Image (cartoon, rainbow, N blue to C red; front, side, top):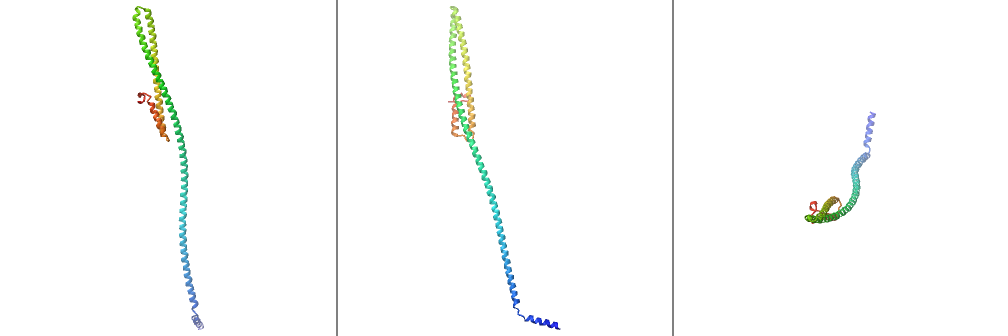
Length: 245
């Protein structure tokens, strides 16, 4: 009974107390919860922004790495291009030197062809002179033979004179034979000189074609050399590859 009364008394005291602190504590708790929710939302937003910034930073870094790789490739390409340009310049210089050497050799070949032409003309002139001399010797031989025949017809009257005339005719015949042999040799020499000139001209033409097909050949020089070779052909017979004048 005492305990029951005490409990009733405590309950009455508790119910009679002021409820304000309890309400204040509840309000403070709710405010704290709202503040915590705001802080949590702000933290989430900040985390999302940080994630977005991290993603942008990753993309920017990837782009920077790609730009760096492209720059490295561009630099390597530039180095290769410069090396190729240097090599092309060296090759162009070598080609120019080769063309100049070819031009010098072409001039030497032209001079050699001109010398061969002069020699061929000299040989031809000598052959013509030898032929004329041989013809004259032949005419003289005919005249001598006729004189010998006349002398032989007169041999009845002067046998000794006829014998002398016969000996003179034989001597003239020997001279004519020697002249004919000399003319044949001169003719052979002229033919050999002509063939040599034709061969040298053919060599000059072949060399000209080789020089003309080289890179860097001057068109003016090529035209001039080709005209010179064309003029040289006029001094050869058509049967030997010559042309009409």
